[in-house]
Structure formats: structure tokens, C-alpha cells
Image (cartoon, rainbow, N blue to C red; front, side, top):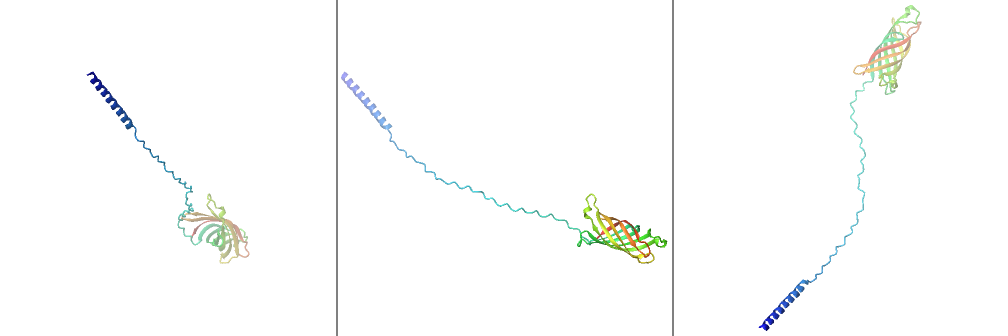
Length: 231
């Protein structure tokens, strides 16, 4: 009996040892996995792309400056005929006189120049004559002359058109129908334009008039003020 137990224990021990040894061997074998070599994928070499050359950006040419359109100019007033008529009262050669003037512009020939044709009536006593009968005189005269503008004297503070003038005097009727001889005058004048009215003008000068044989010439100051209208 004891021998039988001993044999069973020995068989059991051998069996357990064999089982554990087999399990260990299997475990070792199962632990060893086949080594799979990983393929190393090398990155593809980067293509070297040449950098584009830096180009200067295209700038459109600056357009030529365009001159602004001229502002519309108002319609010019009619230039007129370059004529004016005037009437003045004052002194001619020191005697009372009423005079009518007709001026015509000669700007196309001489800028600032005007031709003048005048007719005046002079009455009074000749202070230069000693003969009583010939002291009193009445004369109708025709004057042919002209004026010239002194534009350089006109200023904004004093907007007066200054001018100088001279004329040849021809007496056409003296006293009781006698025709006269001749005379002359020179003067300085100024004209001031009044809008929508006309011009006020005045003149100051000196004149001499030989109106009859045997009678001293009439000499004296010219001074007159009048009104003129241009058309």
C-alpha cells in the first residue's frame, strides 16, 4: 500500500513538472514573435524651385494734366459805334458859351485817341478890345480837333477818365453876319461814367479867337461842365 502511494505521488509530481515545463516552453515560444523589418521610407527630396526674380511692378504712365475748361465768359455787351455826344456850359476864351461835342473813337488807328467836332455859341464883351462898338460880340464857332486819353492817371480810388485835347476854331457867324478869322484852344478834361446814365465831364483850358479885322483877338480861359452819352 505504501509503495502504491509512493508510485502515485511520483507519477503526479512528474506529470505536474512536465505540464509546467511544457507551459513554460510554450510561453517562451509564444513570446518570441517574428521580427518584421519596417521599411524606412525616405522622404522624397524636395524639388528646388527657383525663386522668381523680383520684377518692378508696372506703373502706368502719369497722364498729362488736362487744362480745366475755361469758364464760360458772359456775352459781351455791344461795343457800340464808338461815338458819343455831349453838351456843356461854361466859358470859351473867357466868355459865356454853350457847346455841343461829337466824339468819334480812333482806337483802331491810335488807342485812346478820339476825333472831336464841336459847335459852340459864344456871347459877351471882349475885354481885349478898346473899340466900344466891337466889345459886344456873338459868335457861332465850329471846332475841329481831338482828344487823347491819359489812362495811366486812372485809379480805383479815383475812377475818372482823364484826357487832353486841342482844336482849331473857325468862326462861321459873328455879330451881324460877319464871318470871323480863326482861333485855337487846348484843354485838359476828365469824364466820370455813371452806370445806366451816361458820363459827366468837365474841361479846363485856354483859347484865343480872332473873329474880326481891326479888333483884338479874344483870349481867355476855357472852363465847362457837361453831360455825354455814348452809343
